[in-house]
Image 1 (cartoon, rainbow, N blue to C red):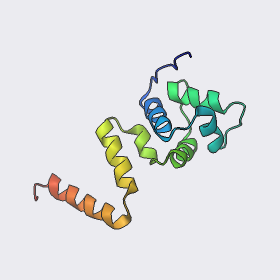
Image 2 (cartoon, rainbow, N blue to C red):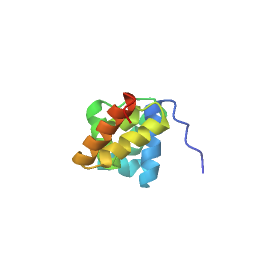
Image 3 (cartoon, rainbow, N blue to C red):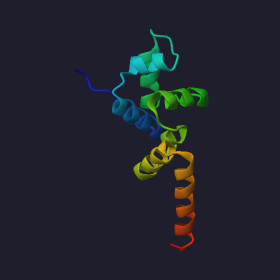
Length: 110
């Protein structure tokens, strides 16, 4: 089985990681976000390898299909990416508490 090209962009790496974590094939992901079935695998592959960058409307659809916030795709560090996903998964009140704790920590109050 031939190996897939390595992602050349941060977006491509995050997209591939999220897709593999969900166990979704490239062609299936493409169809899930509304791409034509005949070109869906090639389009997702081009996004993953960095040949093409998707418009933000497509990023939003990818985000919904892969259960990650759009910001996840643009986080420079793995730790920040994990924080973004974790924060987005919390209910509103827990997000507010976490944000308040972060503000306090950054001000040296805790």
